[in-house]
Image 1 (cartoon, rainbow, N blue to C red):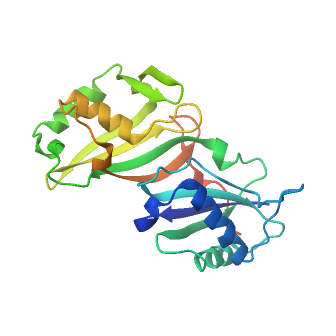
Image 2 (spheres, one colour):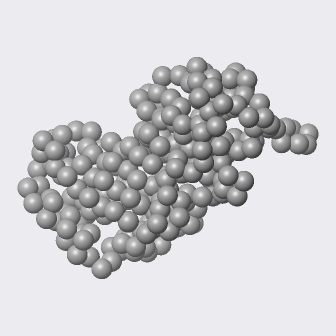
Image 3 (spheres, helix red, strand yellow):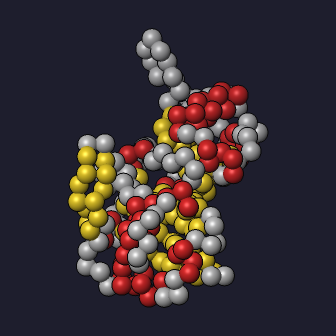
Amino acid sequence: MRVRVKFEKTGIMRYVGHLDLMRFFQKAVKRSELPIRYSEGFNPHQIMSFASPLGVGLTSVGEYMDIDLKSEVASVDGLSRLNENMVEGLAITSFKYLPDDAEKCMSAVTAASYVVTYKDTNDDACYIDNIADLKVKFFDEAHEINIVKKTKKGERELDLKPLIYRFNLEIVDGVPIYDLLLSSGSTDNIKPELVIKAFHEFIGLPEFDDLSLDIQRIDMFTGEPDSLISLGDIGDEH
């Protein structure tokens, strides 16, 4: 039986990379004495998979991990056992059993939502009075948003417009706050930094530093853009 675990990664844990996070959870599951299933062969390992890795420096309240169990554990008990073995910055928020035909979280992700703001309220973007109007011209009224994306294989031109499912902008105490829903997964994985960089260039701020942003992933989704389902809404507590 497969379980989907939802967790938060915040605070100091934002600086821990994905591989170290995986090793931590392997040890935490073992310490929790959950009846996890192991692979067969010369080097057995716990059967677990994570959804789209989170970049170093980003926080999240919507991370997911699937694990295979040999026997059922009450959801409230599984959640409690895991939380007893977490550290500051990691918290388990859900423990649900998946239906047999559920796709693994790693391959199921098609979109992710983010909230993005600026670490320094004196950032140049905070001084553009008509930034909300410019956002409308950049996204709402645009037919395409062409950029050059750098990849491991080189550079390629890309139209961001069909890959941005939501781009909202709110000004709070003079600071822009972006609410983004972007294509994610193995095919078209769009980072929020890439979208904000394109917006900065549009509004005349070409000297962009992605380290100036404070980015939090809110959730991950599966399905088509017009019918997305949160990975956390799949399955039931037993």
